[in-house]
Length: 107
Image 1: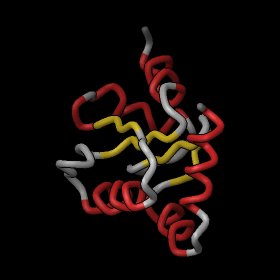
Image 2: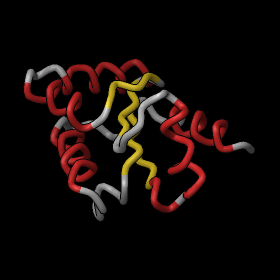
Image 3: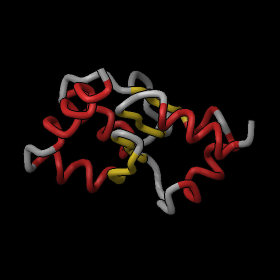
Image 4: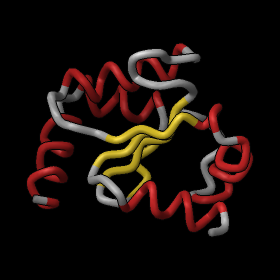
């Protein structure tokens, strides 16, 4: 399977997916850590992909959705953004309902 197909499969595997450096329990970057903490604070299950564990995904993910940085958060297969956008949605109280709706819709 080609790397873009593997990325698409990861995006499709869960209603909420974060591509991050490290894991939620062992983040390897401050932005990834804070973004995963925001997702956890919303109280919904989410999948994660450690881009440091897969050099092909690390190299190609920026091309997948034309987003150059990590982390990347996908909701219902759509890129919502990275740390800054996730933080803005979280602070406005919009992130939790968005994630809850995505999980509900996937059930």
